[in-house]
Length: 302
Image (cartoon, rainbow, N blue to C red; front, side, top):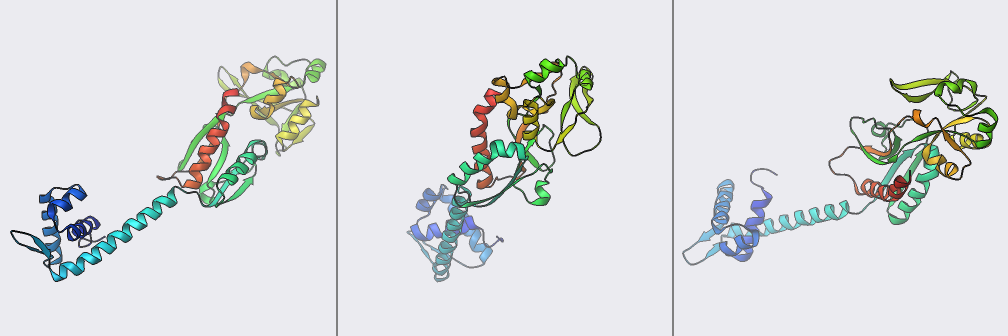
């Protein structure tokens, strides 16, 4: 808005024109009588016209002032209506929400969350992509991603949900047959279930006094799914490195045993990631809040 079209000045003049009294206008707008008088004088000087006729008994509008007051009142009303509509829209989720997650985590946890969200907010269209590929949220136009780890990225905001712990697991039958590894290097004599597509030697991370220690592991079964890997471990086909959120129930029911606990690496939390904005859109804000509520109890159990 330029110098001659300050919305606050227009509001002051429209209020004065309605009340025809400096004191009443000031009381309505929270200003003193002197402030109202000064602002009107400044407005007249900028416009180069007289808007108000002043006498010792009363004030009145000039012909130009009366016409200008009607325009001011209309501009102020439309500006307030526009602000109100934006505020109301800002409180109501709508549009398309694009999110991504790893397939294992997505199938186990995000699917139900999406259904719940869709039921609560019917005006939001949802585009969910479950992939092991590291999606670039900003470049590819995604609103949200579920990620594991504590690494921060420029331009992205992280909302931790629960610990992203891992476990080295084996079935009781496997450990009875092949013994329980006591140290990470003992895995060289064991069959491991490998998750990934790389054909080179796979290395599992272990915590040591000198930091993270990568240990080469091998096995005859290589898969791209933690779900399949867990089934293979449960069947006694080898030792697996599994996310805690997938094997928690199997460990609790003693279908699997967590081993090598002193060397377990802290991989950081499971978090929701979204591009950083000063004002978060309602569709994103509501999804983040729903995820926090949904996973709160789960986080306490881990």
